[in-house]
Structure formats: structure tokens, C-alpha cells
Length: 195
Image 1 (spheres, rainbow, N blue to C red):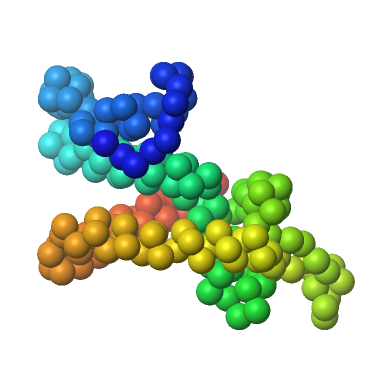
Image 2 (cartoon, rainbow, N blue to C red):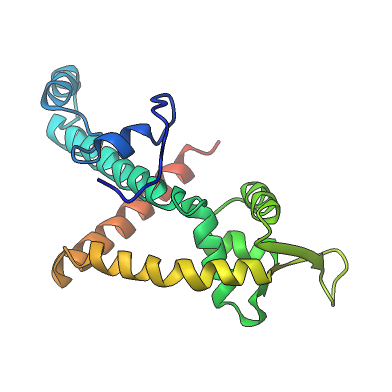
């Protein structure tokens, strides 16, 4: 089981499944995959096996995301909040603009605004006017945010090392290259879909 401190049994929570059933990740079972393949079989130009593996890849990726979110929720933050705090912690003067943060953690500007609101409510970041451009805002890690990172980041890096070490260096390299290639292909598909 994951190291969590949940005391309720509310199975409507999105993290309930992972907390209570993390030994079997949420991926499509063989009967669902078989149905997907049967559905695709009559379609010309589609390889049912490739599509089925695509579904399995997507669901495996989502299972990892859910497990990471569940693990981090025991520390009171989401994965994106942790990435943002981590980025600020390692920035010079522990200060960045919202746009810089959004680019660094791959979020839209509007999503970053909401994320920063939640981190500000937690007391981990503060907003201030940019010293050189009054139209801009600086985001700074607060003393409370630094204390949180001082405790959370070593654990994050130990956990990451333990998890990723289950893969050989070759597997890690192949996986990283595969993700980068998939990201490029998705970006190309999105570009083609624009009117």
C-alpha cells in the first residue's frame, strides 16, 4: 500500500481507487481491449493492435499520474503544485514571474494563475510587483514554502530514485525517447487539426 493517512472510506474521491487498490493499476482489462480491437477491425487503414496498445499506454500513463497524485496528497500538495514549488526553490532568489513558471512546468497561463492562488492560500508563495516592470508580478517562495521544500524535496528525490531505479539505464533512455517522440507527434496532430 501507499504511505497515506486517509481515514475515510469515500469511494467517490478520485484518489480512492489508488489508495485502496494500488496493487492493480486502473488499466483496461483484456475483455475491454478485445472489444476495442473488434470495434476497430472493420475500419480500413487502422491497425487494431496499435490502437489497443495506444489505449494501454495512455491508461498506464494515467495510472502512474494517479499514483503520484495520491502519494503527494499525503503531503498536502498536487503534482503540479510540487513541480511549481520545486522550480521556485531552485530559482535564483527563489523568485520567478507567473509566465516563467508556466513555461517551466508546462501549464497554461490561466492554469498557473489558479495554481498560484492555491499555493498562496497555503502560505507557500507570495505575489509582489516586479521591480522593473509594474505590469508584471513576481512570485516568491515564502519562509513557510522554503521549510516545506526543505522537508519535501529530499523525500521527493529519494522516492524518484527508488521508483526510476526499477528500470535499467537503457529502459529509462528508451522510455524518455518514446515519450518525447509521442509528444512531438501529438503536437503535430494538434497543429494539423487547427483551422
